[in-house]
Length: 314
Image (cartoon, rainbow, N blue to C red; front, side, top):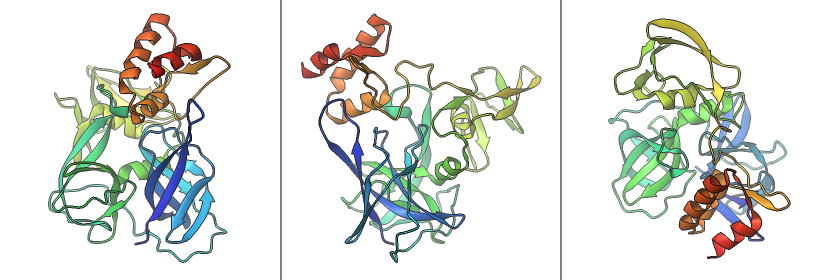
C-alpha cells in the first residue's frame, strides 16, 4: 500500500510557521477518492496542503476536519493522474481479541481493548473511543494517519499515537460517521442524567449502553457524541417516561470552548482548545493554567494580547 506524506501548516498566535507532518492513505466512498489522515486536534490551515506519494506531489484542501474527532479528510483532485493503490475494500466496525491486525509499517499488532481518551487531553466526561493495541516487536515508524486493517483488507481504524509499546487506533466508525454527519463543526449532546434507555438499549448502572456497530458497551456520553448531529432526535426513557429529545450543541457552552481555529482580533486572543493545544505542543503547558486562571478572573475568554504575550514570555 502506498502511503502519502502530508504536510499541513498550523495556524499560529505569532509569526512562527509550523507544519504538522503525518501519514495518509487513499480511501474511496461512492466512487470518489479521498485522502485520510489525522489532525491531532491542531488548528491546521484548510488550504495548500502538500501531499506526497513517493516522488510525486500535489496540493489539496480539507473536506472534513471534524471538531468532534481526530480525523481529517482531504480532497483527492479528479485532475490528478497518478496510479496509486486505493484502499476501498470497506470497513470493519467492530473488533474482538481474535482478530489479526496489520499495518504497512509493523508486522505484529495485538488488540487489547476499546478504551477512551478525553477530548484534548483534559479530565472530563467528553471522550473519544480508541482501540488500544500492543506492539509485539520494536518499530520506531509509528506514523500517525496509517491505516490498520484486518486479514480481508477491511479498514479497522486509523493509527493515532503511541506510548512505549501501546498504540491507539481511531475506530473506523469515526470515519463512517464523519461522512454521514450533517454538521462536523459542532459537538452535539443530550444532557439528562436520568436516562435509563435509548431506543432499544438500556443504560446500565455504570452509565454504559450497548453500541451495536462496535458490538461493545460504551459510555452513554460517547454514544451521544458519536450519534449526535444537527436536527437529530433520540427516543429516550427517563423515570419510566418515554419522550423524544433533540440533540443540542454544547460547543459554545464551555469556557474555553472547542474550536478548530486560532482567533485574534485587534487587541485580544481567544482562549480556546486550539490555542491550548498549540501552547502544549510548544512545551508551554504551564502557561495554559496561568491563562485559564486569568480567564476566570476576567470572566471572559478574550484575553488582551499584551497580557497573553507577557504570560507566554515568562
